[in-house]
Image (cartoon, rainbow, N blue to C red; front, top):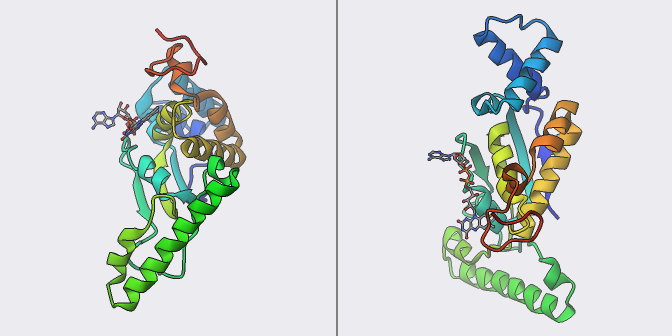
Length: 223
Ligand SMILES: Cc1cc2nc3c(=O)[nH]c(=O)nc-3n(C[C@H](O)[C@H](O)[C@H](O)COP(=O)(O)OP(=O)(O)OC[C@H]3O[C@@H](n4cnc5c(N)ncnc54)[C@H](O)[C@@H]3O)c2cc1C
């Protein structure tokens, strides 16, 4: 099961921060916390997207598959910084944890086939290592289902955009779960984040009012 840790470097008061930074440019009194919050809210409601890039988010993701991390990497808005657990230096020959999709886990026979295949991969990697094949080359056998660990630095704007895509019913189930974990983590981090999650972390059909996907889930009408 995946786990998200919100690092302490994450902005604690994203709405107020937006208001403070915008206030500098408007010649406003940025010593007044209440006014900063109100100004931050104005920037959000007005859709002044560039200001949403001030709140920074540092998170550790672990227990998610390399496959969902591959999808996470496609979100390049805001120039995120990421480091991922090495498949060259970490010794996976002893075995690795992997994600089992619910459809497989809930089917005894399918679960056996899946777990046997993972064991086969480990056995093959051990045989190759015994032949002095470099670890980075044995690692080519590692599957997309293996668990990986990532440290990500991104911003509010990128995460809102990510939510629009990845809360879509058509998105990959593990990514939707990751988004829910992220939203829970941010909501627990501070009240301002809780407000943002509740009001801005929504699927894209809630923004447009209609479904833009070819195969519609029925949540909103197609245009
Ligand atoms: C149902 C579904 C199916 C999908 N299927 C696939 C699939 O089969 N294969 C696949 O690879 N992906 C797939 N995706 C992922 C999707 O296509 C995008 O790759 C992913 O959402 C990240 O790209 P993005 O533009 O949304 O986000 P970001 O790259 O984070 O961009 C966010 C926003 O920033 C702006 N932006 C970013 N880069 C630039 C730039 N260079 N120039 C100007 N503006 C920029 C744009 O406004 C953009 O909307 C799927 C997503 C969904 C929801």
